[in-house]
Image (cartoon, rainbow, N blue to C red; front, top):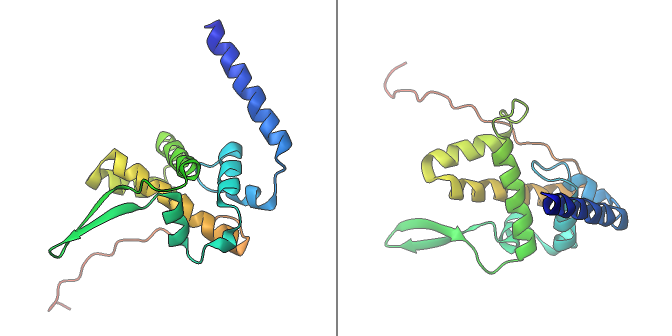
Length: 171
């Protein structure tokens, strides 16, 4: 138990040193607004992305981060596979860690109505936990592109309401 306490103390001290050496730049402050992203993940994401001007679209950033699935298309059928292997591993790790934070907190009353929790629940029902974590990891990657491009804080997308399908031929 003493070894674990000592290790946790060392981790806390190292994180404090990292925070002290890395100034909270405007981009790090913006990234901290993403769901599941705290101080350390925001710093990692900021440093790994570098200049956001390198990317023309959010899709390019998500592909660079490796949080998009591989696509297998054959005979008119499309199957999505695992996340891409060739990617920036630290950036991919940071977005997956942010997704894991969302998954761990999704039952908390303050998190239940968040968009990313709804994404997780919907995808998890259809595809399972691992695929759902990947889907949730892609959301902060896309959002990072937009908040860094526009230099505006994160705003979750509007939740779409499902309207009942109207039966054709009836008024």
